Structure formats: structure tokens, C-alpha cells
Length: 400
Image 1: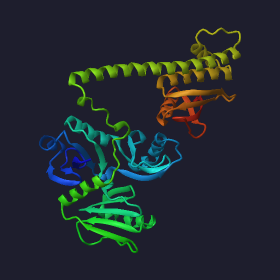
Image 2: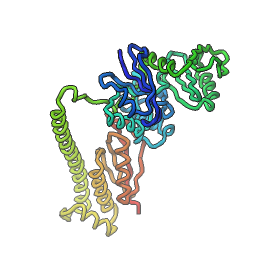
Image 3: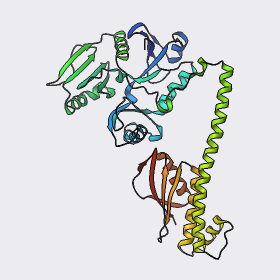
Image 4: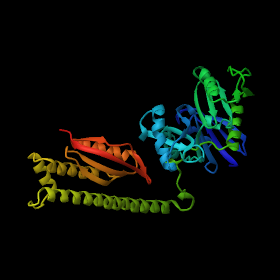
């Protein structure tokens, strides 16, 4: 990137920020704006790419290994690892890859979706689009066998080969020394506003750089952005789409988007209907076979009604199977996202269900629907990757 607008932000779009016009890694102009709105009104140039650098306190960046077979499965699995550090549940996390490593080992970055979405929504309302969104500690030098530390007033930024964090300086001094010792890092790049070293790092080579003011710090970030490729949060669901405005007139864009939305909407409805109907037909056929085996002389008129009626008479295992399979069919139809692979009934009154599903959320929603129907649900074994999704087993029985 030859020319960019660099925004060094506060925690929210209403906080004061510093911006800079950067060309070939050098700061051409730098100033302070009272908010993102003020920057948009007085300094933003829509013809120049914009990079947003967020404060790193809300980020988690870790080097993680996983036996996942694909990048998608890798990122899905690490959400559970980062959940405890970020809080809020896995559905509220945005996880992205910070490098192009293999599928089993790479640096991943996680933040809360809502916070990132706040910035993107506010920027869009002001007519600002970002080419990149990253964190300040990701702009620290990343060299092999080297840890980078930046002391900026009372903030401490740490980065060791992509892994890093930002916290208060008073809380992190001892932690940084322990991390460097544990990782056996032989070299440290230290950037600070004082000439004194604040760490006791015996046997470690320290390369100390003095940053005298905000302009020097901004120049450091600009040069770092030019030299290395920090993690860009605009991945996955936040990845920018095609800028149709650059190719079509506004009225033609509106028409094209409307047509695309209509086609997509009805296409999704048709696809979901076909999938749900196929699943329902398979389950209904299995239920009818069991019903005929249990009651050979009874014609089938309304399978669900007959199953519930027979279950209420307490005639044994066959009635219980029909009740459970009927409620399972209803739950699968209502939540979607899961497909039935195998169904078997045990003499103890439990239904063993083999399922295929795309995400963990699909399984959780099905379990909630079954529980809401008055059933007891247990997971029979751990989840197993299968194609682009997972397979698993549930044991379903009456909760009464």
C-alpha cells in the first residue's frame, strides 16, 4: 500500500483519536480528531484507503495447535479455547487467522463481535470503509526468537512472534519477565519514552529505542504497517464484499441488490424446504415400519395422533418409540441444521440418534428443542469431524 489514512483510535468511536496520512511508510501529515465523526467531517479522504488500529486491551492473540482438517474447522475449534479469556459465549466471538500457517498450527486473534460491529456500523454511517482493521500491539516488530515491548505512558504492549496483549504497565512487569524466561527468548526490542530499562532480564539482549512523543509513535506505527503484514480482522463474516458503487449507478445498484436479495431469499427457502422434507420423509418411513411391526392389524391414519394415543395407554416399548420419534421429527423440522443418519430404539425406552450437522450451534439448538418438548437428552459420544461438519450421537428418552 503506497498511501493510506491511518487511524489510531480510542476504545469507542466517540473517543479522541490520532490520524495520519502515510505515504510509502512515511507520515506526511498527522493530527488529532475529537471523534470518528470529527475525522470524517474534517480529514477523511474517501479516495485513499483507510486502516483502523484499535487499542489491544480487548484482543486475545495466541499460537494454537489443533488436529482440525480444514481452516474452517480450525477456527471453529479455537473459539472454545478463547471463550474463557474473552467471555460472552462462542456465538459472540469473532476469531480470525493472523498468518498463513498450516491448518494445525497458527496464530489466531479473537475479539467480541459486538465491539467490532460497533466500529464498522459507525464508520459506514459516516461514509468510511476500512481496508484493514487491526490492533496496536500487532504492529510491534515480529521477528523470530524476539519479543517486542512498547511502554506508552501507563500501557504495556507485548508481542512475541504474533502472540501478544496490552495491559496496564504496573500489572504486567513481572508477567512479561516470566513469559520471556518461559519461552527462552534471547532478544527483546524495547520501545519506551524513557531511556531507562524497567525490566530485570538477565542474559537477554535488549535493543532499546526511545520514542519521544506522539508524532514519533505515529511514525513508528506507519513504518511498521509498511514493513509487515499484521492480522486483519476483516475476515469471515466481516470480510468486505464487492464495492458495487464503483461500477454501477446508485439506482442500478439498488435494483441489483434487491433482485439478488429476492433470489437468495427464495433460494434459501427452497433449499431448506427440500432438506427438511427429505429428513421428515426418512423419519416418517422408519416410524411407519416400526408401527406396522408393532401393530400389524391397525391401519395408519394419523401416525402422530395414533402414537400419542398409544403411548398414553402404557402398552410398552413400541408406543414409546413412536412418541419419541414423533417429537424428534418435530424438533428436526423446527430448528434445521441437522440431518438424521441412523435411528435405533432400545428396550429400556430410549432412542439412539446418529446425526450430521454443520456447526456446534445446530446441535445445541436441536437439544434445546427436544428438551423443550419434555424429553431428556444425553450426548452418547464426543463429536467427530465429518466432511465440512460434524457427526454425533444423542440418546433421547422421556423425561417423566
